[in-house]
Image 1 (cartoon, rainbow, N blue to C red):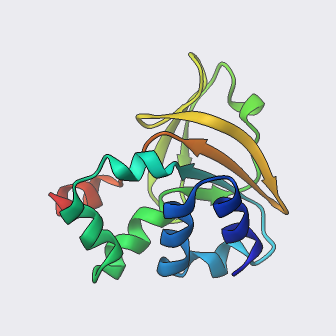
Image 2: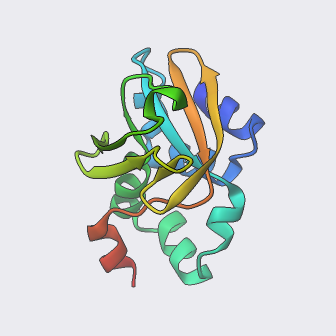
Length: 141
């Protein structure tokens, strides 16, 4: 296990740590480059129907990689830098997400609940929802 996975598990993001490991993203996140990671809580994963979770953690590795890569972006950006702003960020998977710091801090429809957890060159922000790229969301239905 690498430091990012250990930090995610220690912070209570066990399902996301499992997804990061299973998708192979742990190798990317441990390469020493800075990343901002939006980590869904275990409760966020519990909101999904079992068939969706079964597919995500089962035999659909492309879906898992797509969803996990939608949760991190290059660069280490603290929550304070988002305050009062609404920006479009490009994820590691090349897809856009919206970070809105005008009224609290949200990433797409998820609320940041645990900001600024430092793990080496990375910064983890805990969120209360799983981020699904539009293409993955339509395919998971």
